[in-house]
Length: 67
Image 1 (tube, one colour):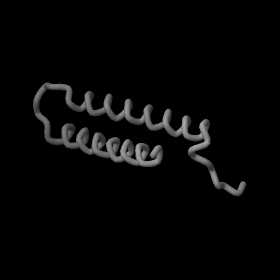
Image 2 (image 1 turned 45 degrees about the vertical axis):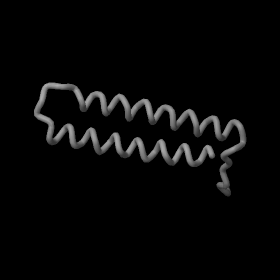
Image 3 (image 1 turned 90 degrees about the vertical axis):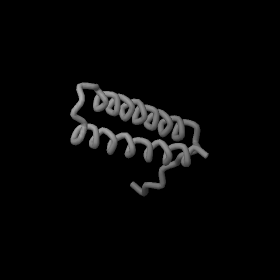
Image 4 (image 1 turned 180 degrees about the vertical axis):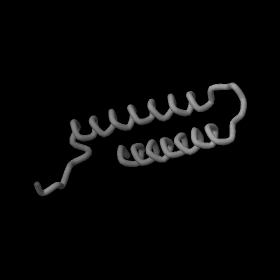
């Protein structure tokens, strides 16, 4: 379940990234939609990092690195 939430958050981060790009390129108004998209992306990224840290701490996510 945790992995699914992390993947969904990563997809939401990508959607926010591309919406910010569209607002930056095509938006001519004086509204701050680019800043709002950046704020959402930063918040989603912080939530994703926190969930990954929780997953490693709780043992739901494990690393299979050989080194």
